[in-house]
Image 1 (cartoon, rainbow, N blue to C red):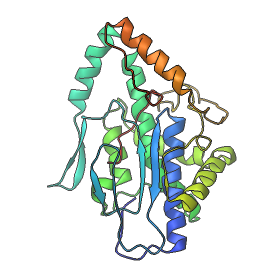
Image 2: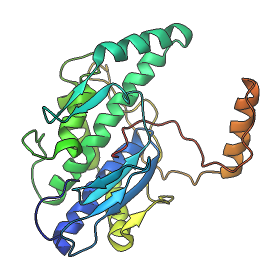
Image 3: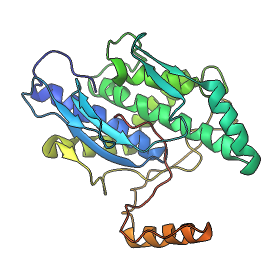
Length: 269
C-alpha cells in the first residue's frame, strides 16, 4: 500500500493491516504462496523495507509478497508514462508454444492471471469494506508502481475476454464479504497489527480453491467452502522435489527447501 504524506495513526495502520490481509487472503484462495506481509509502525512518517527479491522498497505503508505467476515478464511499469503496460502478444505467443507440449496449460495460465487480478484487487476492496464504503475500482490514485487497480488492469489485458476486470472486481468483493472469508482477513489483520512483520503465515490463510476464480464466460459459478491451508510438510516437499529432479536427470538439492506451492502473482517488490 502506498505511503501518503502524513503520520501513520493507529486507525490508519489498522486499515493498512486490513488492506494487506485482503491481498494475502485473495492470493491464497487463488493458489499463490504468500511469503510475507508487513506494515509500518504506528506513528511512522515514512517507511522502507526490502522485498523478497532484494529490492529496496520505499514510499509505502504496507507490503504483501505473493509468489510469481505467468504474467511476470509480460506486464511492465513505464516510469515515463507513470503507468503499467501489458505485452499481450508476447504472453499469448509463449502460452501457445507451451500449449503444444502441455495441453491445458493456457487455460491454467489464464486462471492464474485471474487469480492475480483478484489478489491485487483484494487489498483496496478489503480496505473499502473496512471503511464502510461501497467498493469501487479506483484508477485515479497517484500511487505509481504500487497502484493495485492499475496493476490488476494490466494483468486483465492478458486475458481473452473484455469485461474480465469488472467481473473479477465484483467476484473479489462478493468473496471478501462472505463471513467465512472475511474472518480470515480480520484474523490475519489482527496478527499483523501486533507483529508488524510476518513471514510464517501458517494458520492464517485459506486453502486454495480448485478452478477458482472462474472466467467471465464460465457457464456456472464455482461454489466453494473455505478451509484452513494445512501447514506444509517440509520433509515431504524436499522428497518430492528430489524425485522430480531425478526424473529429469538433474542433481538433487541437499539443503532443506521451503515447500514449493504452485502459485500466481507478481511480487509487490
